[in-house]
Length: 337
Image (cartoon, rainbow, N blue to C red; front, side):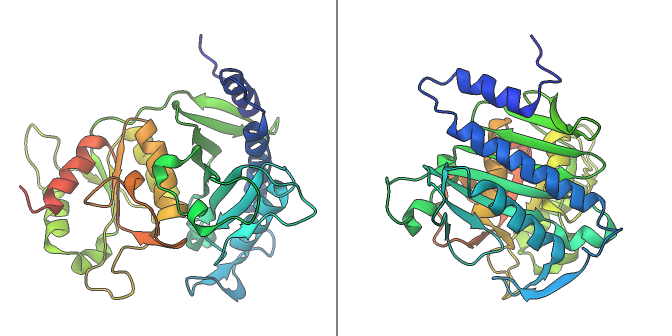
């Protein structure tokens, strides 16, 4: 029986009942994350009417200027989740180090990893932005959270997903058993199930990449992009180019319609020799989502979910989307035709 129209909380509780010995801790974590997203959505939607555009004057761990909405999203999620008693630490793109849950708050078995506001450079031009999150279970009981507990492979995620703040606000998430999407209905203040058991097409007709970086890519990447643009009867080419410049937006479109998003390494740019996107906060969570929807994510050589990070803010090239498209990208990057 279809469960369309079910609230996110009802959905979480239904899934919880299917797990023996579930304590409800994860459901509590997710319900507070949903509240934080509602608050962020409210601020995003009124950003043009209040003084929340622009920069704070601070510089983040990457040397980038911090947007006011970035800071608001970062602080809102921490405030909502630190009192739940189910987290022991939070990792944020906006923070250089592990943020352990401080006293007097109780601590739990989970680690939250997040990009509080992905695509924030697009805020002032009204392009969709989002929040990316993933959840890991810590390996030890009690004591300080170690770096090794944080630096886990993406395959070890307990859950992952994102919120997208666009023409509507949506949440897409997975706990490893299907990918589900919920749309926020402002009139009742609830996320209702709108996309049940999302499955990405095995192959798409859309490629998403910043072609302004074309001259920075190596020859194999350039040949793959040229291949996608070359008309060929019978095999679906040419592909359509669609690039927003907001990772969540580009990924969400391709998750529903099929295709491939790419952010290759910039072989001629010394600032981005390993790509731009962060493994823990961006690539791994979306890789977990896409693979549970039947897709694939790669760094061009191997699955993103098989990569163990060396540091919190490690960057990787990313090829993500329909399985046949990403496999074809890997083939080109190996120099095969």
